[in-house]
Length: 427
Image 1 (tube, helix red, strand yellow):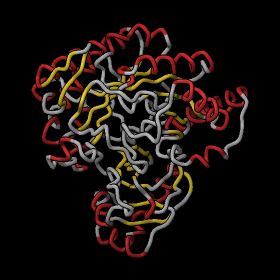
Image 2: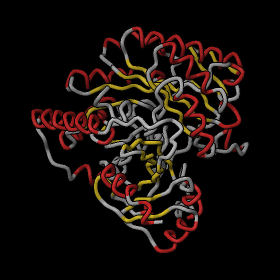
Image 3: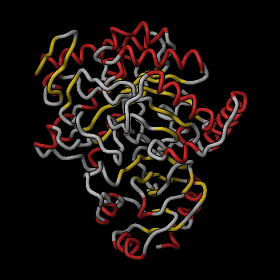
């Protein structure tokens, strides 16, 4: 787990991941998803630029691995469900396991077929499985899923939800019994499962899942929820739900709800910039191993030096927003940021509080940028904003909202400690 960027908050600053988009079919229909909608400007699960065959995916991984020595994980997360595409999914994993045993293999699934394929998952050495589970109550589940297809039969309503939940719970128990790390993803749908997710956390924790990732709802254009004008949760709502779950089990706070073809560091997806990937150098297997070992050693030292235990109440903590493209440095202009890392700083210690996206999804127009008021509203609970640059108008509007913008560059932790130490002089 220590080198898996999605399973370790520390690792996501150092190690890269790649999603192989070989699984187009899905066996359930969620009300927030529209499988027919795709946009290259989007960053959300289920979006890809093009599908790959297993052999093409193997070739892509081989090519990218030579120029990205910190690539530690290759996962399959769609754009449908990997276990609804078992032939393509397991052939891809088999090719990679044989050629690159040093890579972590990772599977992300809705869990419907987990019990059916648990043996092959274990045999292939897949060490990390993420299960998206939005409810443990069939009544609530029936409001989330339109239908479930299992072994040639289509189920609807509470019957469909009950079947899916039963399979998910059995699959999670089987994974943890076999020593396979299991993370749970849940989509936070305010009017449907907001108060219910703590029950999900309690149940999966008892089954042995080690982490809960609560993701705010993204409305896919044309989806059932979108047509019914469902809303996305507020920051305060998601924070409250995450806090309730964190009292039960560890909560992942650095998720970016990545594309099904994402490549690179979390927060710095290179899948849509092939020219960057092509320009990278070439590393031998020995060089890649040495670099990964150096990164792992550096990560451990950093984590040990900054063991962060801020009280859940965050009493006295300073909340700071950071604009970054990744690599644990402040390197993005405020106007170019599509997301902000949110940190709490207390008594010389730093804790990641979450990630906030400025725009949940592309609206399909050329002018995809959100209005300034949206970003200001998003950051209103922060005392400081650290970015590599900012215009006079947004800086003025932020200050009027009580957020002090500071132009900084360099290591995030160092700048957080330095800026909050002298906060009184900026006010």
